[in-house]
Image (tube, rainbow, N blue to C red):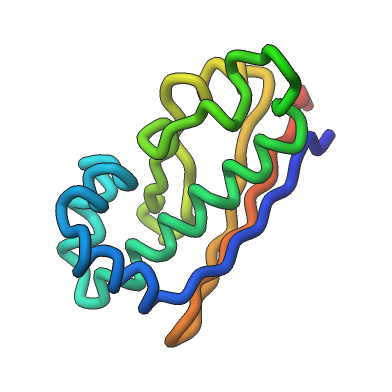
Length: 135
């Protein structure tokens, strides 16, 4: 069962300009150490950083659809950038690790899937929150 769907698209140049303007403050606010290690070692680091930014936004939107109720301390509105980490499996598939409030929000009963795509100028991501079902 699907609980939420989120999508985001961002211009790679926009992320690059934010990094050039705010440098480490922006990087350390948005990205986990694991994400920075991965992205900053890539030839096209801005594309990889933009992909993670779009993925985090898409995850936030997918979580928002069900959690933004008054008084819910685990509302997506309270989720921090560091509560979501995007990584790649050895075969290249993007995955999500969750921490803090997102982990409590999903409570082991729900999972996240993402799909990322990019062109020369844009990155987009779709995120789905779904219930874990036993087969």
